[in-house]
Amino acid sequence: PPAEVSEAPALPLAVKSAPPPISNIMKPEILPDDCHPAWEKAYIKPPLPSDVLITLAVRNLDPENRFGAPFSDIVAFLAMHFPYFNRNIEECRDMVRKTYDTNSKEETGRENFRIKDSLMEQLSKRIETSIERNRNFVCESMLFKDLLKTLVNRFIDGRGDGADRVLPPPNNPKMLIILSLITLYPPMSMDQIIIFLTFLFPNLSEPTGKAVVKEDDFYKTMEDENIVVVSNKKQEKFYMLKKGSYFTIRQQVCAFFKGNIDRLRKSTVDYKFIEVLLPELKEEL
Image 1 (tube, rainbow, N blue to C red):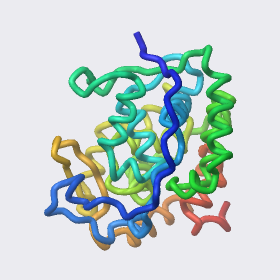
Image 2: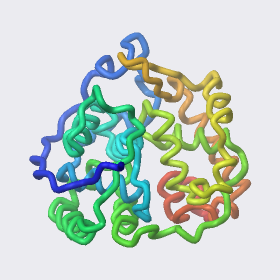
Image 3: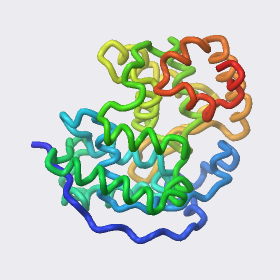
Image 4: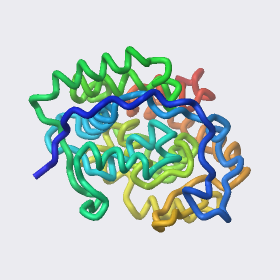
């Protein structure tokens, strides 16, 4: 049966520091140097209790709180929105394990964890209070602070903003995946890319939308010469753009979505997010 979230003690406020050496995360012979502008910033650890972070992830991954969310998706969600955890993935995994009282030997990565219905109201207030107390620091820890309101609303209201966005995104799986590569903090996992796309384009989480980006599309896209595949000590694969290719790829993505601007506007969870992700298109929107 699905495990369930209970309260956990608050985490101490983190001190801002530079990210750990990339060699701690992936093979040292592959260093991403200038593969993405996000590397120029050292993101702080989110100053939120572990139960708040995890329940925020579970509720956004399963807005109706029916089936919960797999361990691997919870970790991917937190690593996607909070770059500190992307650079410290094992710390993130240990936090989730501790909250659910599991260990690495028992986990498969696909266990489903859900929130107790009886705790929903209590956790909603706890999330609002925790975020309000440390709002500036929480925003500082996020890859895109503009998404914070939506994450909280989706927890409190269930499906939340964008639930009525029924149109699928522009039908070009490669461009959708590359949009992820120029947006997310590198290196990123396949789980992070899928979660990002289903968050940005709600239709992709529906049965009819899942056919838009198939697994084969993902692996074909990753064969592009401008995409680098890296591995950590566990031989888990992560993806990022080749050194020096970011701005050229970004221009291609902007050109594609500019030509499909109406569908882009009608398929995103909130078209204003496109202004954040691709400000070059602001006048078009």
